Image (cartoon, rainbow, N blue to C red; front, side):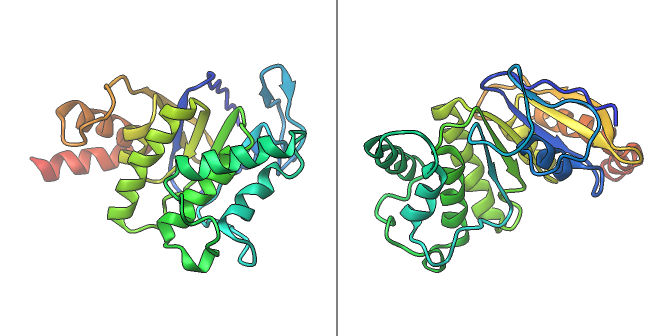
Length: 235
């Protein structure tokens, strides 16, 4: 309720907040999977009324079809795009290379590690050249080391593609590491509590004082009592 948010072309925005505040629901509305809302969601000047190739999405589980190869899974995203066949093949090949999976084109999902499967899902989300890529906790199911590595890879992909990206995450550090802005949602009712601008240069140092200060700012907006507790423990 009362959510007013504009994402600029090429901007990386993260959405954080407590469980149940509506983060994933907001992504479903943007991608057009849910029409039950009041207000208006637009892409450029066009009102969103359903799913479309101009909006890609990557979920927490990779959702690759197990009976298709990696290459075939990614190609599904351009199956109904009005491009010549050669352009489709080139786009699939380019995005497999972009996510570092060259050589695995004929592998099936069960032959891929969790990180590789998520990279394939990101390639599938980008291959149709969407205006915006929606990321719903895409790294949430990965172990800490793989997650950190894929954060760097996602940043590299964004720098290469310059596609607008909207990331939903429970990980405040992940949001600050990747984003230009972090939108903090609060629940009851679900609305924007604060928008934190992140102007630190890339790549960012998670151990820096400036990064830690931003983390406290986001945490304070999410749970005012939590930051006081953290400060007491640190002191």
